[in-house]
Length: 472
Image 1 (cartoon, rainbow, N blue to C red):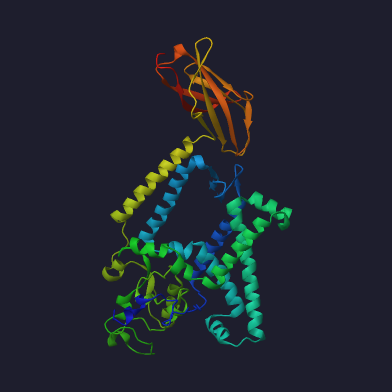
Image 2 (spheres, helix red, strand yellow; image 1 turned 180 degrees about the vertical axis):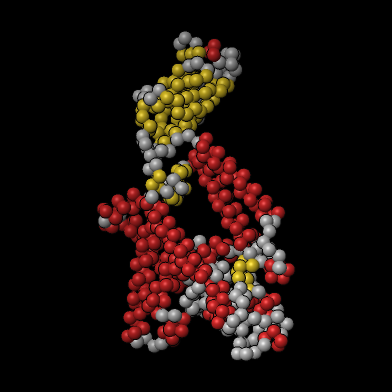
């Protein structure tokens, strides 16, 4: 690669030499891979929009209520008490993405990232419908503000705003829950002004991202583009230009009919620049792997179309690794991939096991800080405790009471002995534990306490019991 060809690394593709924004007008993609991407995108769009409104055992399928610290992942509820499970699940997600990045590059960005899906499959397609393809968009951008331009701009901006408003509502459903969102909509915005203001702020953010900031989210804001530079190696499969075939001995050359390119030493690349024109981030894939490339495969489809027209083999730009291009080696499951896979399998097994061991009702009983034991008649020692019962289900746990499993003793609640714990609610209170001195050993004793619902043991927990040193 010459020094001139390497100058692209001095700046990102969306910045001009004078430092101003270089607006990208990509050509409308077409081809086999683009059709596959559309099917995948529509399925994921349906998933993203429907997930907050799907219920499993009464739990929202996906919810990330940060303010109330309540999270639902695939129908499993997570509370502050389950923070360790939530952390493990997030680590699994990161390792899963890292594994696929090492193996297949930035395929997540091009095929599954919500930013790419909404940008390329929703907003960009609306733009093609209103403004036309690349040439028409460039012409419209340079055009004076006449009636046609105003009409197209206002129509596009209005539709973009409506879609951004819909996305903001779905986003809010992930944060506060779909039931609460529907209730707020039913009540009307006047009853929930703070929520309406938040909704408009989210709408403004999404509108800014998809109407103006666009591909710069992937290039500037998203850390994943930088992370892939650390994770990729010469065995990673990425969207790559086969420079061995495309450049040959004497480099690329414009197409001329009936010319023997092989005899002239020219490669199969006819320097048509269509791979550059179709790129949504404005890069030239022939310069090699770049942080701006999101592996969207638009250049693959475009290059295959051109190769077909000039009767040259397809695959000049394709999914390939560096070693495949230079040494013709096929993909192998490397020790690095095996290491990521092993960690992923182990963590997934740990998470599944902990999920099965997790109880629907979590009990915590702690001694009241600053309080010592109390002597009572009949050689009884009493300690005071606070309890918290977290019901993680969508059903009320009825007729709850405590019993001392070991050692023998009695538990007395400050309020009624039996009570209910509402669905997805926290029950708190105070209780006394009274034990005969003869059943104690030493000044610190471990207690095992059972939590019962309708006389059925549903949870056990432990607590520390203080007594005088002289007692056994």
